[in-house]
Length: 161
Image (cartoon, rainbow, N blue to C red; front, side, top):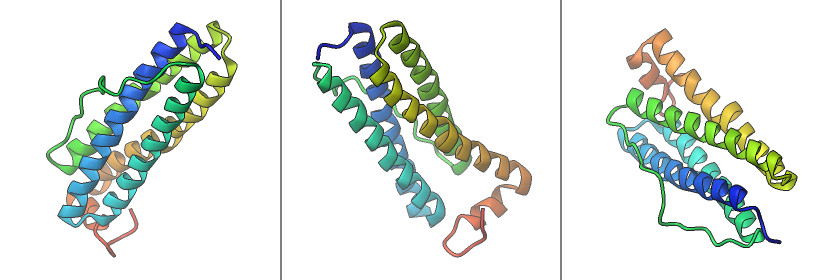
């Protein structure tokens, strides 16, 4: 089934962002693990796996619409140097992905591609209600209880943050 060029261009752009998010989450999760912040490692590793699922869904849809994805256009990865910077960088990625998803959903409506729209709505829900919400909460916790207490809670066996 031949897809709309506009929709396919947005899907490619979304794929570029998902692949960058995957790599950024991988880098951050491995840094957390190295620092002994195992709760953050587990969560970011989970987020990385979800980004792979998102990328896979986009790839499948592009192929269904008769376009092969271009894997050479990945967005820039922003690896932080400390926990707060890493969380902020990850949140910025989620905000960018959210905006791009909303733009793509609008284009899908204009092009009357409701199946792609439905898939993108699921990705948007994951992005806004799961990923971004969790990151916002972590930054809020740091502000509320302070970075040292937050970090202690992220160690294996330490606290419930």
